[in-house]
Amino acid sequence: MKREQFLAQPEVESFIAWLATNLPALTFKLRFKSSKFVPGGLTADVQGIEKILEQYRWKASWQDTNQSSVDSQTWAETQRSLGQLREWLTSAVNLGDEQQALQACLQILRWGGVRGAIPFLHRLAAKGELSSYLRKMAGLMSLDGDNDLNDLDAISVERFDAGLTKIHALLDASGSPIYDSRVGAAIGMLYSLFRQQWTGSGEPLLAFPSGGARGSQIRNPEAFLNGLAAPQFSAIDYAEWARWQVRLGWIIRALLERTGWFAEQGALPARCHAFEASLFMLGYDLRCFGVMLASDPKAAGPVMSAQKSERDGTGWVPTGHPFSRVLKDYLAFRHRGSLDNKASFVAWLLTNPRNENPLTRATAQGYCFAFSIDEFDLFGRPLEELERIVDGGKDGLCAALATETLEPFTLGDERASVCLVDVLITGNAYLRATTEKERIDYLLSAGYAGTENSSKTLMALGRNVGKHFGLLDAKHLPTTLFEQFFRDCSLDA
Image (cartoon, rainbow, N blue to C red):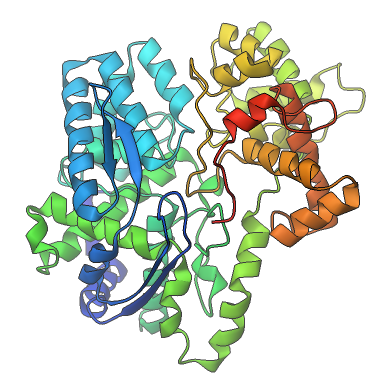
């Protein structure tokens, strides 16, 4: 489907018209906890989409080509910061300078507080394919070209996550939005409200995906009365995520073309990014829309219980798996020269004679939890790198994170790096308590898990991953490496 076909659909046309009418009048209650990204927190009641930009907060820092720090927090500062990153990335990609393109990408991830895509970017750069891949994707994701959504498929889109959406958006010159969990949550909530008022018929056409927050914030409209469920990023493929970025970009451009919103920002692409930044603020916690639900007395219950239901579904409980053993199995699988992907590895696990008890397919698939791009992105790693990861310790952790020098761990805004976060939680639990019951009580009271069994699953993985990389000792207590790696990390916000 191309842009004109997409925008001509009656429901899409009606949604854009609804946004144009309602966004200037809606009131939002922004309530941000104090965190690394929003020091001191934020409390503000704002009417109208344009006023949200004045409240934009994202404290970030990255290093330019001279190793100087570029800091930003407000929207004006962020605009300048992203402008520099955009210029660096665009110049490097156009010149085909793989190392500069890689460094620009890594600094974009640093600005965004995400790191899942780092191994993938290193692999492309090592093969001399990073610039060409980004140029290809830029053509497929442009908002003002003749590109077709169907061209974004499993072959063309090799990876997509909260980091790569930032890279693709910055390389784009037509205003393509950064589509992360917050932006997806906000546009999904607006669409949910539109559907409640729309007089048309048929199943919802625009199932905007989103993802869980790392804290107790709500990012799924389903948590509210009559809210539509947002497909989770973890349940859709990379290409589908990329297609939603394009769809949202088409909607934003069409909306701004019929309004004068954000005119002071400049040309249309800059206005698009201002709109996206406003969605980013709204999507921090969808309870900012609660004022619109309060008029219905039935809304009180769902809104009150939304925090608990959302957290229960997106806490830090992983899919249980024996981390070290699965790594060794994967290395053995790779040494056989088999096709390196999840399906092939799962099939191999099912027939692996090393397993005393045959695995079910669901268990074998669950064993691949740590292989995802949101964790350690293990599929496709060079054998030498994989062997270091299997050996573990500090060097293995560096290899897993695709870095030469181990930098302190950064807790981003998304629910990612669950394996490492579980090490942090487990280490803290063993520091705080001497019995299993006390440790479970700590996890339950902190909201990291919802049941005794899920608490045990969390700590089992935390112990396994922690000991493998030397972050926890034989008694599961934090090591010096743990203290260095997790310094200044807080899960409270």
